[in-house]
Length: 212
Image (cartoon, rainbow, N blue to C red; front, side):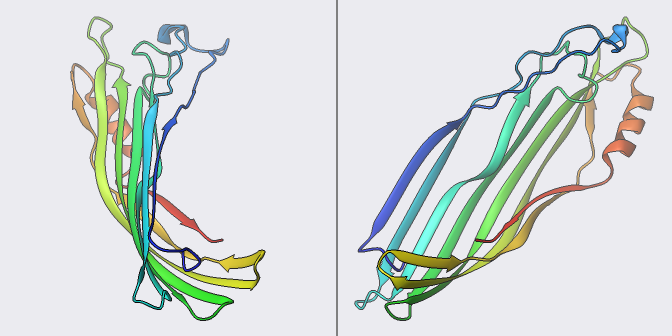
């Protein structure tokens, strides 16, 4: 951003259009049905806002701020699909805000650094197979929110007007989520829920890292 001229602002909006389809294999247990769940992808809008401006009259020190979607996606299968006891709905979204400072040392070199804070939201649902066929499936839900933080640095070298070299290492950041599954429409599903708790475990995490 130290190569910009004057205040700059960027707004962006785009849709995520995922597609996820499941093929039923010939060896699938017939008691689960034959439904493939349909196309589970859910269209999700993603927005971005970025702003940068110089600080001071000499234009060497710059401040930048940005907000946008860092990661995410959503899927929802039909209630009767054969994999409903593993997953029926999944939503994960991460909104990040970043602030940074950059300084132009001379005509060739610039340095910078910043901090990124991300908020991650996870929601997952799966059906529970009750013991008696006359009882509807139960519902297992996992829902949690967590904050993650990462730091970044940057070095820019511009040997000519048409050549720029940049190195921007970023520390690893994680959303550490730990929650207990909840259930509804219980029926005769206690033993299945205990098994599911062991399979999920006490905690899980999503994260990001990168360099450029």
